[in-house]
Length: 398
Image 1 (cartoon, rainbow, N blue to C red):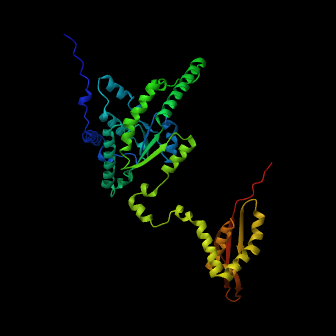
Image 2: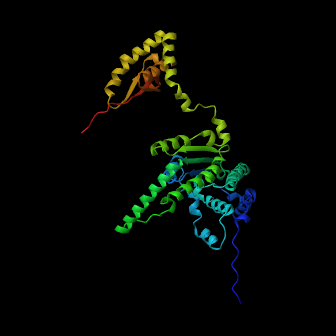
Image 3: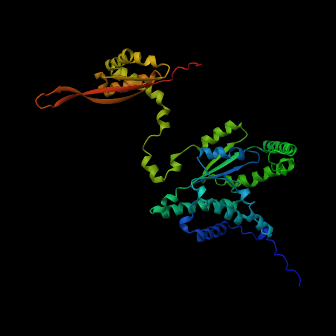
């Protein structure tokens, strides 16, 4: 009896390219296995793409730090090197969009990614783009479905960030080849000394034409896939040709906390009328000058009295604390019972480069003792406790 013929390999022409069919197939399979209440994907997903040599590996941990993401990144190329994927390829199957989406979604359901994850290398095709969009819609739908149940804490408002680290073709090739030379030198030293671990030597890092092809593949496929999401999600384009410090400063600016994006919409609506600190401080100096001039014009005598109080009663206490930059001043002056006077005092200190805060302390002082009844009558003593802070003296010690 002759041996059975091997199963025919899957032709690229037969691969399913309909994003809805692929997504629904993966989604239905996962929901059947795990149950709808366990379809808990990361609250925040950062889709990180970058030209070869743009510094994705160098900056991934910094991106995680900025966004307070504890979980390790999911590197899609590494997922495709797992024993499961290797076995699939060994059986003659093609690793297409369905297989990529399936293994990625399964990995994202791991509890360690609940609060956030960086996806390195996804999406890379139009089908994958559509699948990640449909995932967002499903996450929103789940949040609505569970918002009035005890499980609502597990289905938060999803946040997507699209981040692209970009360098031009010549810079990409130069960096790839430089990395190749460094890896070869490292491996030669490991072999010579017997210490350390050998690093992977990529063909694209040692051959200029292969490096060029790798860049063009990114430009024509991956970059376009990420760019197509620009109109839907938060998109961040980073010029990665700049020095590393400048690149990271740009990443920080792009990924800083934004309450309108991250809070539940109902929570944000409850807070939206409260001013943001950045708006208050934007014109602080201009407003300070306006207030002080207005005090002098509208309350000339009161302004003069407060300045006199600061100059003659408070500064003699503040000056000896020049080294520490922190002084406590207590005053019972009746002048400070006027709210306008307190405003003048704080603003005058601010204009002179000090930071003053005032706390009112009320103390009961025994005033009369009735010998017959034993009753003690007290009077109220009001003490204005003023904390004055400023940059202390920098003195050399030792």
